[in-house]
Image 1 (cartoon, rainbow, N blue to C red):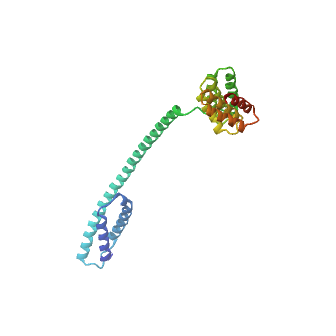
Image 2 (image 1 turned 90 degrees about the vertical axis):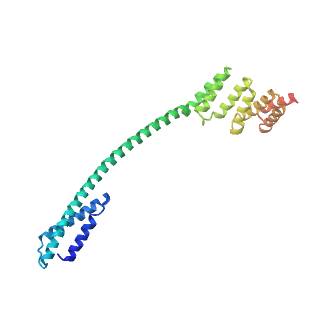
Image 3 (image 1 turned 30 degrees about the vertical axis):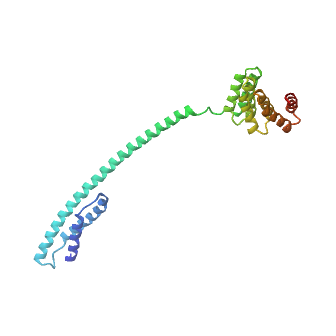
Length: 251
């Protein structure tokens, strides 16, 4: 071993004895193991070619270096223990966070379901049930129970919002209003048919009953306009014949 190699070894030992972070622990452990190997080889080498004074200096340096290596090994072991402890604590904290998050998610879902049950509308009925619901409401109407009939038609609109009976339901609700003397309500429902269902079979009746409702309210101008629309749009229908007779009566 030359003086130059010894100098490099001493410099390395001094560098390694400085500040050590936990992130460097594994890397430094490898360097310490290499250093121990070199120290072992130094002890087995002869001092041939060195003076007595140089040999004593070498032995003292090797002894000091061995002490530094042992001290550094102890620090590395301590840091390793801290790293393992940190891992354990970190896992505990992570587990607790997961438990809290799961509990929060569960409580949030429960609140959302509770809120949904309070605010959501009933699920739509099966399409095949719509004809029966419509017929039941119409039968009640024919019996003259306009309040119940209107309620059933309204329920049909909620349960079967996309059924083929929607326009008819609006029309018959208008008829229920009309039969009960609520002509404004009747006009509002007939307007639903006129504005939203231009191809409905109830379109001509909706125009005619709107005209009659306006006349009932004393709004002759609006009533005449709707009677004229019936005659213009549906000239060959039964509703057009009624509209012509009504116009002759009020003119």
